[in-house]
Every structure is written in C-alpha cells, then in structure tokens.
Image (cartoon, rainbow, N blue to C red; front, top):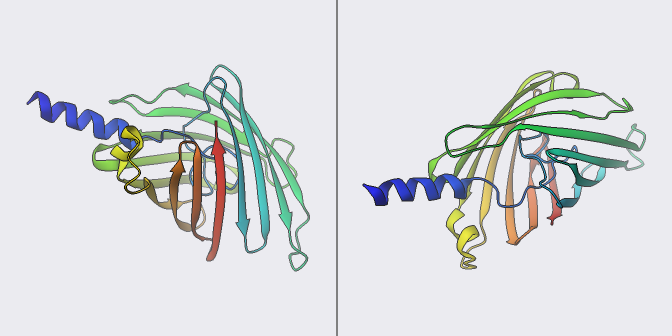
Length: 210
C-alpha cells in the first residue's frame, strides 16, 4: 500500500514541469495560452518561436516573490499586413500547485494595448501517469474560456536524469478561438524544443529557463 501511494505521488510530481517555458504570446505557459506556472526567485526564461507569418522572441524574469514580468516581440514578414509589435506581460501566482490542489495565477498580456490587452486567470494541476490539465478565463485574445491538456512521456527521466529518451510533453490546447496541437521536448535541463500545429499552420520554437 505504501509503495502504491509513493508511486502515485512520484507520478504526480513528475507530471509537473521541472522547468517552465514561455508560450508563443510570451507568458510562461502552453502553446498560445498561459498556465498557472510562474517563474521562481532567481529564474528567467528566453524563447523564440518561428511562425509562418514571422517570429516571436520573448524574455521573462521573476521580478519579485510570485511575480513574473516579461516582454514578447512579434516580427511579421513582408507578406503580412500586420506591423511589428512588442507586448509587455505580467503574471502573479496566487496559490502554488500541490499534490492535491491546483495552482492559480492571474495576469495581463499586452499591457500597453498595442494589439489587444488581455486579462486572465489560470489554473494548472498535475494528474497521475504524466497528465496535466490547465484551464482559464480571460478577455481580449482569449475571449472567454481556454484550456489545455498535456501528457508527458517518460516523466521519471526528468527526475532521474536518464537520457534514454528525452522527456516529451504532448499538448492539445483550446485558446478561446481554435484548437492547437504540439509537443515540447526537454533536451537538457532548462532547454526545450517546441513544435506543432497552431491556427492551422506549423510552428517550432526553442526556449531556455534558468
């Protein structure tokens, strides 16, 4: 019985990301949407996502206890009718995730309202067997409810350091407008590669969290 409880606890912990990673919109999160994860004291993240219409570079840092701030710069190629834009984002962790309860956070993206200022609240919870769910509500680009589910393959490898197969997370996400699908692979601690299908187009990205 004790072994069963211990195994379940390990799987719950393993399902949670060891290193947070930026979403395409900049905030720590999934594909397009934010999660309840917030960078911890002393942490920062760098990311770049290549999209069909251009690219997005992001930088996030823990500015104070439970407070993450960041910037995302969108570059659009010549065949796009959009202007290059820079978003400033902020997220505050209300409740940390535990084995039993979900994490909760509130935040705002595009504070300067260059495109669409968006306020949101998000919850994240690890489940047994490498699953993790996210749900939130927001205005602006999220236009109501958003949600995502993740399934991590070989989560124990993240904890033990085994390099037999890099821990890879499969993602399905509803961003308030469309379904997105992707995968996030942990190459080495802190370094992740993202790829998938977003808004009916492929994307790929690279991020590092320290």
